[in-house]
Image 1 (cartoon, rainbow, N blue to C red):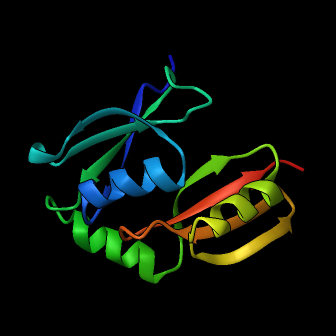
Image 2: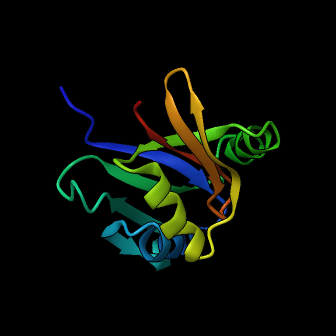
Length: 126
């Protein structure tokens, strides 16, 4: 069994698609703005797990997303090979970081705002 698709709630799937493809460099697997449907994938694994940028309009999702954000918790973690290089690349593209790369027991991490209601963590194993 493997992960085929997972999702994160976003406050605007169209803007999220733009951020995840133009800033993060993800590939667009499916984009139907009229249906608020956007699925992206890592350019390193375009046939791997997809990420559904899901509208936060249902079943208490907006409140959940807002509370996770207020708590300062990242909603998802992306692995990177060179966190300092990725941090500088994203920073140069205007991505706003909550913290710079910081060494922890489990690896080095940095957290940024995806502009769509979420904090996202990038991590490099030590």
